[in-house]
Length: 198
Image (cartoon, rainbow, N blue to C red; front, side, top):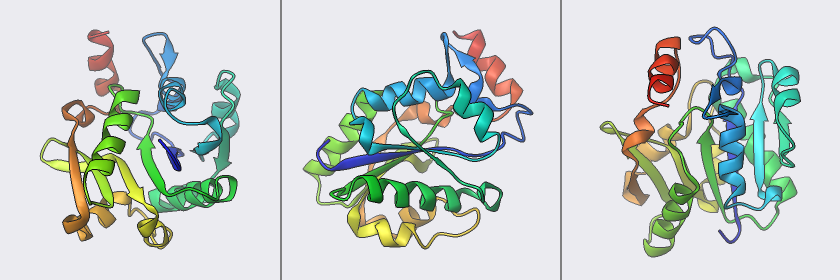
């Protein structure tokens, strides 16, 4: 993963869940710890930025011995764009040689380190500058952007996420099949369904 970093987005207030989903437990770990551990399997710890917002003090206090950079997005209520920008600014500052950046979230329970590795390999083998996961007739995160798109990511606003940039630049996108990426945890029903298969 040469010259590649990752932004882990975990700043939302889990309004549909009613409690911080980052701290919900699955297979003996919180969703957040699972996501960080997955990233640490393939990324240098200095190349990982975790973006927290709502309840950041409580959530940060529950992260178990992970030596990754935490950035606080005080403007998290304005939408995902602000978290992407906070994360990318932090990542560039601590990793000036960065050439590629993954954007990922903490509520995809089937995300594995192999997915990051295979997406990076797809980037190396294609002439595309964006690699995006494909699932349920949509494309989204995790997504890998080359440096070419960093400035555009910094111009996002409000609820706009990385998907907007992907959709605008489809000629420069290669997709990676991640069928289980469609399973994310937004509601108590989602969580109960997941736990029933644990």
